[in-house]
Amino acid sequence: MNAGTRALEGKVALVAGATRGAGRAMAVELGRAGAVVYATGRTTRERRSEVGRPETIEETAELVTAAGGTGIAVRVDHLETDQVRALVERIDRDHGRLDVLVNDVWGGDHLLEFETRVWDLSIERALRMLRLAQDAHLITSHCALPLLIRRPGGLVVEITDGTPEFNTDHYRENMVFDLAKYAPARMAWALAHELKPYGGTAVCLSPGFLRSEEMLDHFGVTEENWRDAVAKDPHFAIAESPAFLGRVVAALAGDPERGRWNGQARFGGELAAHYGVTDVDGSRPDCLGYFTDVVFGGKRAGAEAYR
Image (cartoon, rainbow, N blue to C red; front, side, top):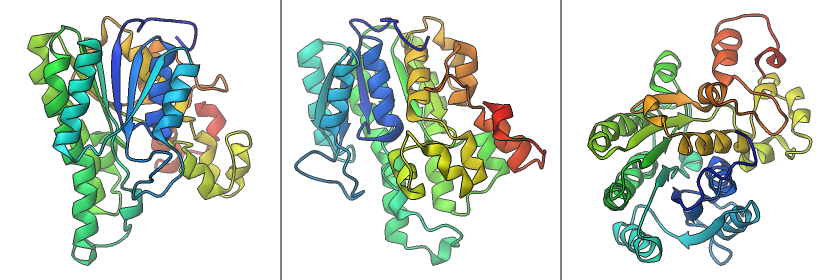
């Protein structure tokens, strides 16, 4: 399942929020499986978004093409309905179909205020975070799903951070962040009901401890020497590359029986075990098991036992 398959040849995917991190990796792996991938986001080589990072959608599209797919970068603010509608109209004109929609829009990390009670939060920052996590996903689904349901078998993947079950047991120390990350799971559950009559599937997925560009920068390491960061945070030993979730999404999109996951919210590692997907180092990080047993459960074990 990791390489060499062209299960998505002739398929068209839209990865909303593909500028960096898991979004970029999902776009690349869908392309590696043969898909045409529209990679959207707000940061281009000419203009950065409020996130302020250097990664661009053009780079993502080039990586998709280099992997064997067809990458198409389109600058879209997914909070602007007219921009999303124009994007979908372009996909319809160019291909007349949409087979996979990945709702990965976020870009709210810079708005987080951890260990701050709701009455002490900046309400402007809080509402902006909710808009990015909820409104952008809703607008994208509203505009894109009429094209996706034109053919049976469409797939919607909502991306979040943690599953409802996991987050219920472990408060994130920010009520608004908690709401923001619960919403995509509930959206996938609701979309599962709405898509089922059209042969569609909706799933919510979460990465584990993600080695995103921002996280690597935080620890002062690169993907090549990321294990050096374990000295600063021992739990980083369970970290997974963005490609891990990307490979899971590509396997899911290529599975004719993916309806088995309809409406569910899962960690990527759970589906990786089912599909035989591994990370770039050949391991299969079980972040859910590690955090449940070791971090929160007090079990004396190293991360290697969960890779």
